[in-house]
Length: 252
Length: 268
Image 1 (cartoon, rainbow over the protein chains, first blue to last red):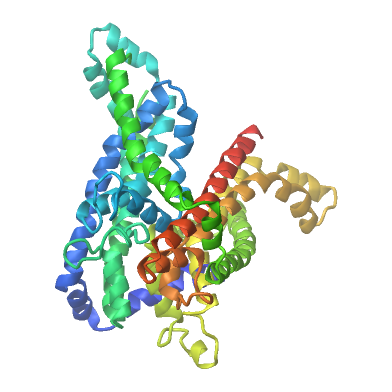
Image 2 (image 1 turned 180 degrees about the vertical axis):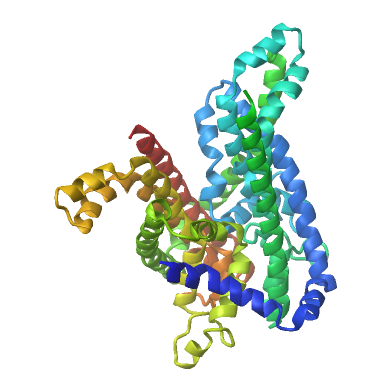
């Protein structure tokens, strides 16, 4: 079993890391900071940050409406949230292109624009924040909210002082997962992103291009950078969640 | 917190508006585009020789990947829950690794290991083509689907504990009998859930597979590669919509199964 996991997961990643340092530390640095590489990383991180922020706000709102509101068809909407996880990423790309691509029936053309990237990534990362906030909202103690209201707090104050602090760890964890997913995403942006170097080319597309141009060392270096960003994000999440858990344990 | 009727309506409108623009309308449009020329055109488009070959290849990959993931997934989950050994924390981290790795990076890493000039590149010299062959696509799919069975079986194993297994052992059952009669029935719903997730991801994987496939129509094209090639290379937009709709139909079935299984699991 250890052998299996090693051959399947660890050895490829080890080979990748070694390949990225084939030209020494200098070679790695040059490959990772080549203008095209840096531009693609900048696009990736910027767009992922925007998408993460959109998710944080609208994902929380969607979770709120699913838990605290009652309307017809709610169960269907709730089931629909998981669809982006079940849908192959390339299908997500095609689906969005059919509405927001060339020949759009509503006249919105996002093909090969930064907004196209944002929409594609928002689509595939939708479930993260919703599904991490939803259970917390269901468990949340509503008596505290009612107490605040009876003491004369406005809705906005109650939300800011009572609800938001309870939700923050879940929102952060969902947002972080969405960000980590967005920086590595390929299938959903490959058709709608346009792959324009320095404008809409994301890091994964740059890596794929370098492999096609037979420059594996460049591809490996940027791959390692992507891995490091993802690991750093997940590490921050881990630290935040242990901290909030500890705070909860200390609370009376 | 009691929101006024107006606030409630505003929040509902914004949330539903977002979901409609992002999910519902695009899916409606693609369904309409796939079926507008008639069901016959749709069927014809997804049953061309290249499409049939793609469906067969995708199913073949699923048929190889699922049994391997079931066996190694159960063994890994058992080791994580029951094992007392050093490096268990490390094993936990390794199991979660595939979720943190971009599919493209998976592809590059596999090329560096198995490709010509890679660590195991010598295999290529003796006639075993991993990269740009079926083995490469299978390995890529295993990489991205590895965590599912482990992560679904693990909590169930935690929950059931070892009492029944110990009772069976005291009554003289061999460890094999205990596994078949006690452990496996107990984890069956968790395992099924893991398998459903594995199948969905295996059919839908694109980034990792496109990196290690030669992508020849009719030979090394999976369903997702077919969608991509029809749109990009053949400018066959309708064909891409139709193939994507077929994949979407599979995804909907998976979603339905997930909901049913979720129900089953919580009943237990």
